[in-house]
Image (cartoon, rainbow, N blue to C red; front, side):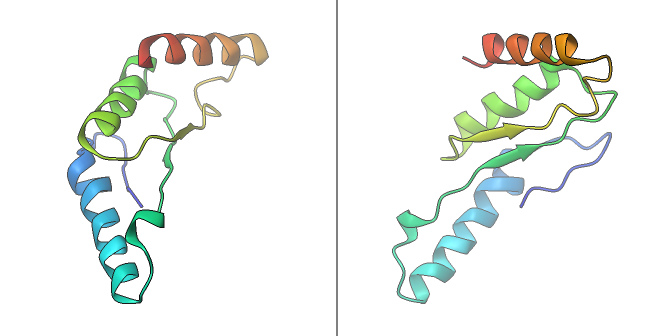
Length: 97
């Protein structure tokens, strides 16, 4: 749902919250319980992204929306193998808790 690109300043309200509210309004209009519509934020960091930037997106999304599930695809950050990927995951988890 949220579209970003390098240099884009992430805004959880306009990128996530507002579109999700619209989807829920449409669901309610179709007779569906709007609370049953969940969301998972997918984050695709670029090779230039930092763990701190990823964590900022996670924390701001948690604080400014009701989305509480996040999937981070580290494929472009973890270009030096499994050990590097595990280190990135660990740092992200530590900072995002």
